[in-house]
Image (cartoon, rainbow, N blue to C red; front, side, top):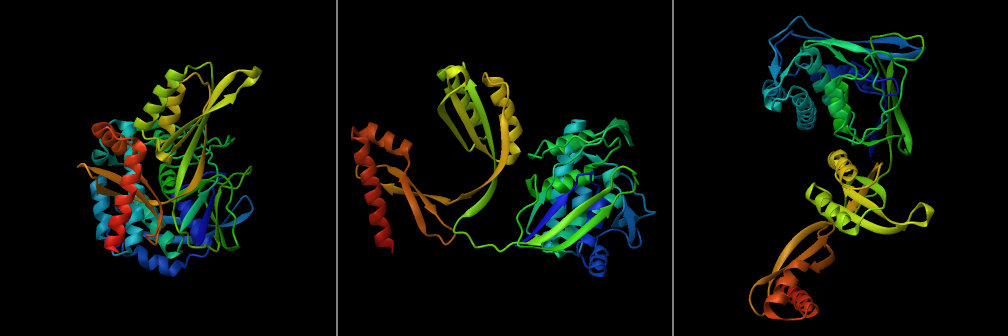
Length: 403
């Protein structure tokens, strides 16, 4: 498995990420040839790569040059460019995902639907080439999973088409709010994380924090920013590595785990909160009795959710419970595939059997659906345990006859 670690301690921009990938082993001539396949007017841009130095570190500087300045583009215009480009399907899909994420973040800033967002700086040729060029490079390098460091935000203001805005830009803040990105305090007094880079990183990075375990490092690249600072190197570092992977019988997915300690909170209100958490997208909610400080009885609340649901669920816990703080951290879980098989019962009606399968479609677990069994037991005045036994027997009999 090929893994990338994006080390962005001093910020990131689209051109810096490109420079880092070139330095990490991207074949420049092959990449340049793919860039020519982007569906933009012939001769509308060129891309140069040069060796430079930032803070004493040898790095690659990528520049996109263009004299072609069309009117503002909307998301539909840009996705059309992506679809018409003669590049790999993987690169197209990644580029489109990045732009959709960016449009969604911008739509929240301006209060209009994502499809109606008019890209200004990000709709310019250089930004389009940065994002599509990154997607091409990512595919050419064969990166399968990415990790990312904590990100600095910078400070001050920046001039845009909409005038002067605070750093970090509102779109950057919205992008970082969609994933569990750790933020670090930094003395950098300028915009060190651009919307383009934030959109790229929050799309490709699956795990944030420290560098991953690797069997070996196969490439290291430094991408240079435009500014030169005497206090820190204005670079992005990318480490490419490989790790032997044993095929799993189950599907892996990234999740977020949210935790809170609750005392002085009624059980009735906790049950209500649990229901609201499920309704808001929690995958699982667990409540465990606990002894709190000063020997008081309390509860430990643990919630599993998709990363994009982390922030709203944290806010829900803070508003609905007595806790003053909510922890969250990323995790990975293996899950079995789940399918439903209805079985016909003796007195009419059906009960669904939930069957858990591995990736080879082998059954690893099965269980009659409780709500179905309870309804059937009530309707026919039969003990629940007999309904469960009958449902399992019917499923076993049906499977044998089909086998």
